[in-house]
Image (cartoon, rainbow, N blue to C red):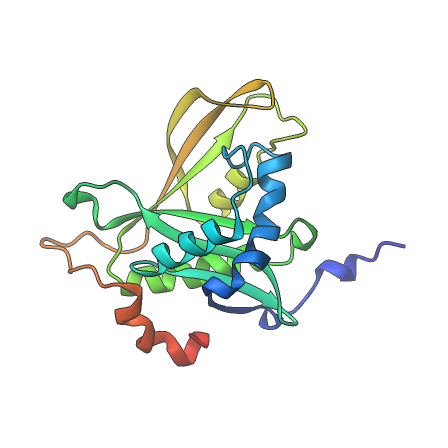
Amino acid sequence: GYSSQEHKMDTNEIKIRPATEADAAEILNIYAPYITDTAITFEYTVPSVQEFEQRISNTLQTYPYLVAEIDNEIVGYTYASLFRERCAYQWAVEVSIYVKKTAKKMGIGKKLYQTLETILSLQNITNLYACIADTTEEDLHLTKDSMLFHQRLGYRQVGTCAQCGYKFHRWYDIVWMEKHIQSHTIPPENIKTFEEIREMVKTQYHL
């Protein structure tokens, strides 16, 4: 029978480390069901492993791309990306997170995001934005779970784009959620790349 103990685990068992291109296939296995079965991502087709390797390496040129492991198996991942192209936006990033469907409610997402925030603050990032699919009526493809998860971690809703994504024969909204992770100084600190600050957090996060 089901035991509530199954979901109660010491978060120390969850190891966070940077992704490498070699992780692409394992990460894609987590992401693919979100494409084929949900409206959480607005992608239609599952990318190739090669394309995913490229996405990881492109991200790591500037931002963290992290995986969570339990017993050497990847159970979730998170990364940051450019929020907008123009120079004045450089202190803002968009964040994304995906946890293996069978590993929900174990504290994996929270630990991934906390580590991501620590790194981004060392990079002198101030603003985080999450772009989340939303619907007035929950269905088989979309629930409110992602919004609630972000709210619990201190994000607030700052905008809605109505019926802007079409998937599974219906229109979905997106909601923008925002979190400030440090104060806005004048002038702001220069942005550092993930590589530049990696040494500073190496021992703490096995980076």
